[in-house]
Amino acid sequence: MSTINPYENALKQLQDAAKLLKLDTGVYDFLRIPKRILTVSIPVKMDNGRIKVFVGYRVQHNDARGPFKGGTRYHPAVTLDEVKALATWMTWKCAIADIPYGGGKGGIICDPHKMSVGEIERMTRRYAYAISDIIGPYVDIPAPDVYTTPREMAWIMDTYSALKGQISPGVITGKPIPVGGSEGRGEATGKGVAFCIREGAKKSRIKLKNADVAIQGFGNAGTFAAQFMEEMGTNVISISDSKGGVLDKKGLDVEKLIKYKAKNRKVGGFPNSKQISNEELLELDCDILIPAAYENQITKKNAPNIKAKLIAEAANGPTTPEADEILFRKDKLVVPDILANSGGVTVSYYEWLQNLSRDYWDHNTVINRLEKNMVRAFNDVYKTAMEYKVDMRKGSMVLAVSRVTQAINNRGIWP
Image (tube, rainbow, N blue to C red; front, side, top):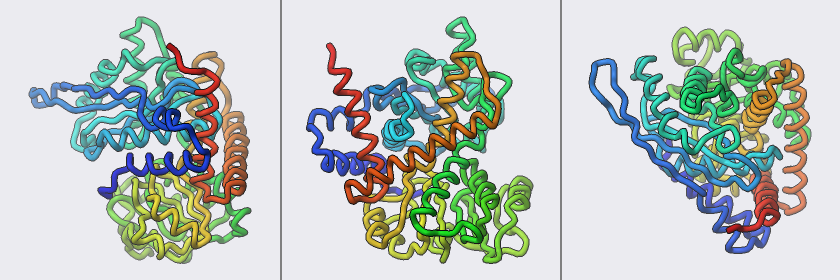
């Protein structure tokens, strides 16, 4: 991953929006500084009997519009600045989706690939214990993120419920369906990206039928996005994971590639495809590019070489501010992360509503509501961008910051 500081990028985006809105300096500082940052020590007894101490974070950025909301990632490269940036982006993401949440994020510095299931469970439960005083169904609702799954969410829910003495499914989202999860949650991020691409294609005058698509990243968001793009009739020509990518200009068979990846733990070597690097994938001659991997992948160095007409950010923060300026000048439509990948948090909100009411919805109800919300959010952002004559990211930031600022002003400062 790049060494560019994601929190500096987040602050630059806020600064740009603040200038456009002529924001009061006090309100700007309010939005710039997270409300709470918790660093926790997580001692875990490993399988060899020794104790290993992991470091975990929970950052709560802003709750003017509602409880904090945001994922928890397990990764060896987790940093506090990364978590602060992601918490900040979650505030804007929830505001754009117009759901009553603020932004939060969590992370543990670890490599789950080198840990047993038992070690991951003990670490997860200890982390849940360590942050239990600052989370809750009406306070802060975590969710899955990089290298965390419904399994870890169930452990956190169970740990919190045991500590509080009552079953509390609403404390976390992204859970397995038998313990309060929602239909449609697993595919929600990828589905939301696909809805945004469909709307963006209309604005970019791209015919989706046989449009060439390249996808960097083949995790949850990238996998589902690939499936939905194929269903829409596009030609998915290239897909990559952390070990490299594959290219077939005639079109990859997404379902066969999913099975190949599950068996071989990489996309590299897929039959009848050409090996390609992640860097090369970004610069392919294609209509639609979906960055679905890590932060800071499109920079001022490679942005001039991006050929895709439409870039939809399934990952968080894949484009630097300098790259944004270059792409805007080249008349590329960038659907920013805080809009494009907000399907996940939107269906998390639906899961939370179902948990609080104990009334559960069928799959069609969830997806129909998601589609309606994503289309409205896209059009809100596009309209704002056109009004201010800026790119979609600045448009999304102006819309989000104005909504959060309105909530702050309505609530006032007390005591």
